[in-house]
Amino acid sequence: MLMISLDRLDELFAAVAAKQTLYLPADREDGQAEYRRWEDGVKLSSRLNTVRSAKDFFFPQTEDLVEFKMEGKNIEVIDPRKESEDFVVFGVRACDARSFTILDKVYLVEPVDSYYKTRRDHGTVVTMACTRPEETCFCRTFGIDPTAPEGDCACWSDGESLFFRANTEKGEKFVDSISSLLDEGDTEKLEKINERTRDVLSKMPLANLSAENFGGDKLNEYFNSDKWGELSEACLGCGTCTFVCPTCQCYDIRDFDTGHGIKRFRCWDSCMYSDFTKMAHGNPRLTQLERFRQRFMHKLVYFPANNNGEFGCVGCGRCLSKCPISMNIVKVMKALEVK
Image 1 (tube, rainbow, N blue to C red):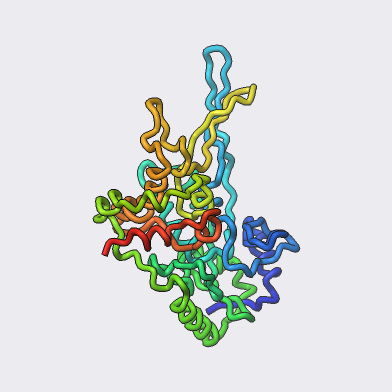
Image 2: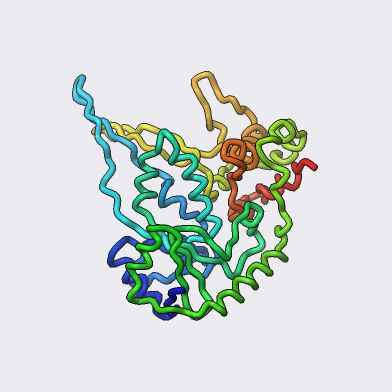
């Protein structure tokens, strides 16, 4: 397997950034990590995960869709999109890498979302295997191996070197672009680290969390459960869980009068909001209970029912750490599980 010494990471990043825009997790002043465009002085974070996922690169929180300019009865339609740059997202964890396949099932089916597709076509995802999982992690519940991440190219660290393996054609091009910096490396130490990581994962608090009793054939049992009232009682409807979630895909479309024309944009929306799905006749989900139920039914029942059993959650743990009332999908799964 090809490798590079960790003390040459800046050299590696400079070589990548010379050909494509490079983004990677970097520490903020508050100690959290966020994706940042690499430039000289930006260091790769050692934290397990970023506050917000890499979803932003393909499905941004806000984006302009179209502009209109009107003069009398004449309307000019303007496409605001510019030629997309090629870019690399480095250091994506296995959970976030799996989220892209979930989003692909939404945005790359007919009719294809051309905004999303353009970014996917131009973006290369370089993943990083986990070595220090946190207690909020439960990716293995959904069949994800954090020691063998997906993505175009996967990386592993043994504490001294970084190892690369191309998974796709894009990944092969990425490795080729930095091949002059890489050497053949011994993976014996790496294999022991991966084995130790898997052993740690087997002892984590959520190691035995199972999704086997959820899925599309359990719609009536879960939808009609009398536990939704108690579970949703304290929910603030703040939408934090949806905004940190790497697989949430809902959006709203708005028009804004600039004074010189109209800009139409889309932005993330949340099924936890009282105006979500609101139409001319009103809102079909009038209570927080109904909105709360919608979020978790979609992740655990509706999505797998329509996608060959694949769940709409990747176990990244962000909702566990960010919910202000400590309500999350794990508590819902444990409370609702049909025996």
